[in-house]
Amino acid sequence: MNDSPVPNDSLSALDERTCRLICPVAAAMVGVCLTGISLLRVATAVRRQGTIADDLLSIDAVLFLSATLASYFALRVQSHARLHWLERIADRAFIAAMLLLTLACFVITYALSR
Image (cartoon, rainbow, N blue to C red; front, side, top):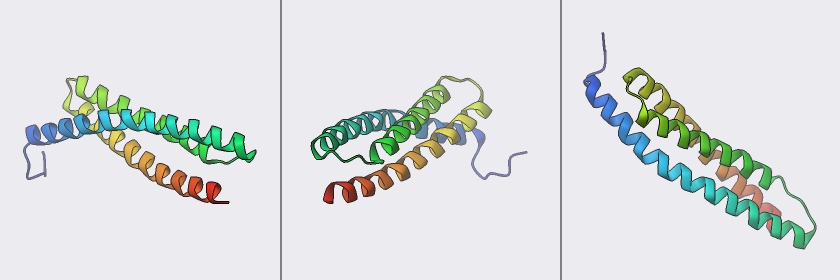
């Protein structure tokens, strides 16, 4: 029995819309992380001083890739249960990646201001 006031079809449609939003944004964010890593490599080569920010961005790219793949596969499955499960994974990976990206931005700002 479903305790939700929204019918199951509406939940599936909501999850599908969420996946359609997460997939392209998370994929683009992988590119942002790679660009950030490249820029940090140039900056650290010039300054001859390393930073942990490129490591954070590498982990972040993997999290964004996980969100992208989970949302992509959620759109491809036929099972509503699997759709909800993959959508939750995509959602959590995306939020974790955005939080880590924010942390990396603070590290980059601090490292480049010294």
